[in-house]
Image (cartoon, rainbow, N blue to C red; front, side, top):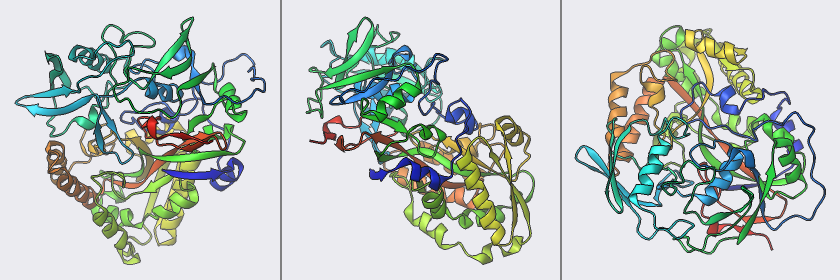
Length: 515
């Protein structure tokens, strides 16, 4: 976890961000059919009525924002702000740590048993009301998560045939050949019979204090199975209807923390000093290659471009350090990242690799509705032009950008995607998948992907390395970096915290408020 002391005005000057932005969420604007995408930022947008800003009051001991009208159902609420609250109320079968390693939580194991998968649950887990969690509760939660209204629906689409086998065991089938599923089972569990409610019954370290159907605070769950000391016994929820009010509450110290993507225009709303705590994400920024037409049909050119990208300058100068450079589709924090391969790719960057294509003309297509992505595309174009190629940038609005990709009217395009928790790169490599616009296919790469998907825990590192080498050799995409998002805290209020992309309040027993 990186802790930065930031004055936002200086950050904005460094990034050169413009203040205009579409009212849609980031993924709706910037991600071409992103896998497992969730809306980011402070949506919903402000209501039409004039904002009634909060009066100056003494800061609370600890308070977080909450859009009451969006509810706290972990399966249907896709708002980032509310999902921070959700992470305190509900726990998952398996969780993902800051190093993207899978950790057992409500489930002990998930193992292949013949043609089915057997899921074994932890013993002694209780809901807020003291009732014991059973396999039936998990079955209903998984059915809810796989439903059409759930944010987990695409992730669980291959699951079928859920069946309770015992008090703490259930089984299911998985349509795809897999050797390891736990990273895809970071699914929250609620009590059966409450799964459709606005605030279902959970097992988390806190429980809601309800007043006329609205949650105004969270209290310590005395039935929490982990029985670890929490950083604060109660949390105040600051209820808001729009982002302007929430920003104002944070500025005044009434809200202790919020989440933000500091490379996104939403962060323009914050104007005071604050502390920013960065955490890694699976949001990959990359260049996609047109492998079907134009100069990028040449595999050798794609390989040369892969090693020619100056990732460190992009990360540190253009993104102010809010990203992690990577030439691979696995995050450097991931246990499956091959650092030797990454170092080898960095070492092969030399001018001779590009000499064959001196004067070659290439066009990078980018969505103009993201100022920072446009800046990155122009930097890459300028740096490659300095090295003898002729690279231009075509900045298009969202509809034009989509049309260009779908029609193949590009040599390279700058894209961003939220990869699944296991960093499955199949979305780029399999014909017909959403981000394989040029229909790329390689039997060698396809076989390596299949071998990695089928690998078990013992063979997964070797299979991941082999897959990464195939992707680097074929280079249908050119990874640039993984974004880092931030938790912004009121100045001097928090001394220590740990968070992940999937759980804002990761290990709340390790958080510490300042004295």
